[in-house]
Every structure is written in C-alpha cells, then in structure tokens.
Image (cartoon, rainbow, N blue to C red; front, top):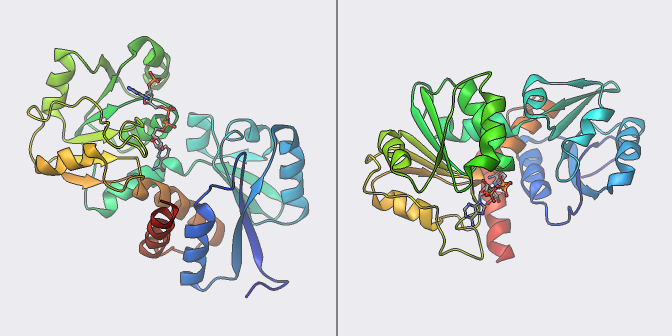
Length: 285
Ligand code: NAP
C-alpha cells in the first residue's frame, strides 16, 4: 500500500508512457517487500533543470533517465560515476541526502546478463554487430571485463571510426565492414557474438544482421540485445548452429536491477522482474 512514508522513484524522458521500467521495477519492489513506488514522468527538454531541482526538493530517492535527457542531465548533478563519465551519459540518479549522483547502469546490465547464464567474456574474442547508442555501453563493458579482442562489424565504417578512436585509449578495437572477408575471418574466431543493431526487431522480424553462420564456431555465446520479439531470427539462426543464446530482456532488466541495487541497497529478484517484463511485452502485442 502507498502511504505517506512510501519512497518515490521514477523514470523521466520524452516520450515516456511506453516505458516498461515501471512494470518490472514495481514487480521487483513488491517481491522484495520494500515500501517504494516507481512511476514514469514525461519531462520536456526545457523543463529538465526544473525536474532535477524538483526531484531534490521533493525528496525522490532516485530516478532513471532516458531519451532525450541522458547526456544533458549530467549538467545538473553533484557527482558522476566513472562508467557514466566514460560514456558521457547517465541513466540512473541516486539522491543521498540531497546529493545527486549520476550512474550508467547499462554497462553492468549488459555484462551481468551473460554472467547470470554462466558466461564470462574475460579472455574471449568478441564480435559486435552495429555501433549505435547502445553499443557504447557494450564496448565499455567488454573492455572492463578484459576481452582478449574486440571486432566491430558495421555497414558504415567511416561513421563509427570516431567511436573506435575514442575507445582506443582503453583498448585497440578492430572496425570492419561486415560484408568483407576480413570480417568473416573475425567471425570465425569469435567466442562471443553480439547483435546491437535493430535488425530483426518487431515488426520487421524477418530481418537479421548478415552473419555467415557456416563460419561461426559451434557452441559460442550469442547475445541479441533486442527484446521484441523474445527470439529474433538472429537468435534462431544461432540456436540452429548450436550456440548458447541470450536476448535483450537480460540487458533491460539488468540495467534496472543495477539501478534498484543503487537506490535500495537490496538485491532484486531479476527472475520476477523478467517475468513481469515478458508478460507486459506479450500483452502489448
Ligand atoms: P542506434 O543508435 O540506431 O544504432 C543501431 C546500429 O545498428 C547502428 O550501428 C546502425 O548503423 C545499425 N543499423 C540500424 N539499422 C540498420 C540496417 N537496416 N542495416 C544495417 N545496420 C543498421 O540504435 P541503438 O539505440 O543502439 O539500439 C539498437 C538496438 O538495441 C535496438 O533494437 C534497440 O531496441 C536495442 N536496445 C536494447 C536495449 C536493452 O536494454 N536490451 C537497450 C538499448 C537498445 P547506422 O549508423 O549505419 O544506421
């Protein structure tokens, strides 16, 4: 029951009504028996400073931040965590006695999903398909986990070069056109293959990134960060090739679970959160 003592959490963005975070965060809160409530609040660009000041004034415990505020919100916070600094984006704010600290939980969200399946990227050859907004957290996560090598395959190398140059200060990354023989060679060495393109996402479920599966080793770990549908064509192809697979529910719930830990200090039940997400996604179709 919500009372005068209930602690308040929210996600801000614009648009925000479609956000699934309230669904799985409130499921996690209920499962943990905590007196918190999590809602979604639309905030316009011009109102961002006022919204953050309001968060402080009204004693919100924490917030998630999504598009279009992830970068600009950093200007209004008191401190920024290392991952968020490297990525130049905050998706989580923690309010500790009026001091607002910004975090980026996408990094651990991405990595923890794999680890929960018993797969560690450390020392592995990783191949990443696509390099847009979500890929930044993936690249930084893989670097921190000390992968042995990272190859990124894209359709437009020139566009992605600045991103690879930025991360070169932490680790050399090979950037290749995914239509080339050099990319097929990298694919044949991969022990971890990740799709960070929207190819195969609902409603265009017949699409998939151009992977020559005859080159891919059997039994490698294949991770698609898409979560609608739960099984993309890419993941189906991976399964048919004897690979271990994971879909994007893991990253979505994983980033939320990491925010939950930061706000409450409590370990969330990610199974309950994933179930709530899956149910909402099924009902939404
Ligand atoms: P984005 O910024 O648009 O980047 C997408 C990447 O895929 C870019 O490299 C883009 O290349 C490439 N791409 C897009 N359409 C393509 C096409 N038709 N053919 C070839 N390449 C194409 O998107 P994002 O925000 O990174 O998100 C990517 C996917 O991840 C989406 O499906 C999104 O729903 C999902 N996602 C999941 C989570 C999660 O928590 N599970 C979190 C974030 C995102 P160009 O730059 O050349 O267009």
